[in-house]
Amino acid sequence: MIFRHFLLDVNESNAFIVGCEETRDALLVDAGDYDARIPEFLDQANLRLTKIFITHDHYDHTSGLDDFARQYKAEVLSGAGRAGEGRARRVKHGDAVRVGNLVGKVLATPGHTQDSVSLAFPGHVFTGDALFAGSVGGTSSQSAARQLLDAIRSRIFSLPADTEIHTGHGPSSTVAIEREHNPFFV
Image 1 (cartoon, rainbow, N blue to C red):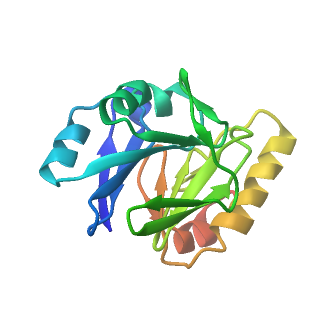
Image 2 (image 1 turned 90 degrees about the vertical axis):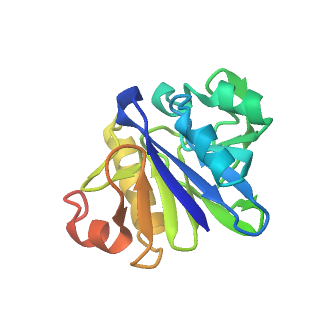
Image 3 (image 1 turned 60 degrees about the vertical axis):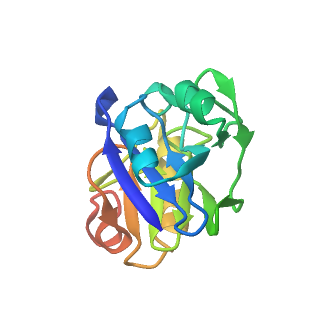
């Protein structure tokens, strides 16, 4: 798997490229801003952006979406069936997301927003604003907070301990570190 992280200016959000070494197809996780480093990396790595996965429909994860989708004619996937200003293919818990020969699994992680989704590939999970290193995403009510914590426990913490967690903001972590040390779960 080809993997690259980009720290964007808008709210210091993260964007990630996941690419298939064999087919050279690539997926962008979240598009908080149109950052020229992303197309430069795609060109240098000889990757073809075919999909954009949106973890949740907040501007700091979608502001660059229209530009990327237009430039690359990439399919947009989201838990809401929309993202930013446009429509997207709605994905739900358990759906497979194929990027060349790589297969990821959609994990519903509602709470920060009701349609928040994470994407797990072997060894990696992209959680958007559901789970951070040492924290969790903000919620609008106690019931949404319980829903979020339950989703993280059952869907993220059930992944192998060494799975890398790539978050919407801040540094990456691992399932083992967050399960054992994140104050929301200890």
